[in-house]
Length: 260
Image (cartoon, rainbow, N blue to C red; front, top):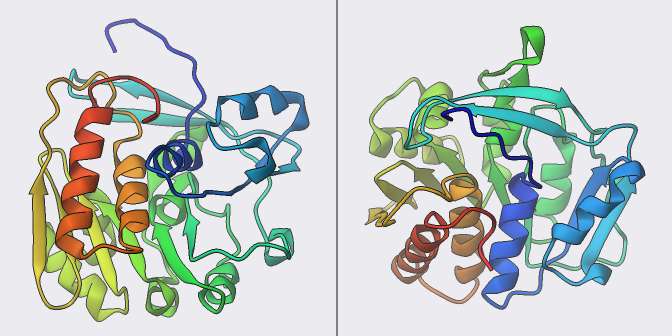
């Protein structure tokens, strides 16, 4: 934006793991990158022994061009994409309470991983990794997840933003969109927006207002908020977990980089 270029480590797994680690939850990550770029792993804040890195022909790299000061409008271009994940990539010695699909681009995950991990623990999924597709000229576009009705019943925590919810449901109204996603099987849905965060669990809509004092750390907003929420839900109710996550991400948005 305004001619300034910043090159940094990012992505859903980066912002998510940093947030959950910062608030005291033991966190492991499974990632794929070209080992030529292995120095990128130094940016993660979790202990090195909790990073399960697999070699890939390429490392996923994305260029974001922002068109407004609030960073709500952006053009995303895929510069390179890592190899997809399969069930065989999941370490045998891992036992987790929550398995979080923190993807960037459609095709990164074999969808059968959702059912497989549903049998091992709770599944949290950010639909960005199932809707965002590499189109012409490598520019990323959003398309509906064709398999959504098959896999939503296996998802305990679903995360979308307002635009993604509309793509999936055809409904602009966030509360009604959340109701439809619940009807298709998602047990608890988070819909993020630039003003507030909404949770719906099939019984009640919960909302909490975002209150950042500036937007210099806007990138990573949804990833940070969702990670804080799902980890707090391990031992907190919806209201308390939502308030905590919204306060945390409001602070994160005031400073570039992950929450630490």
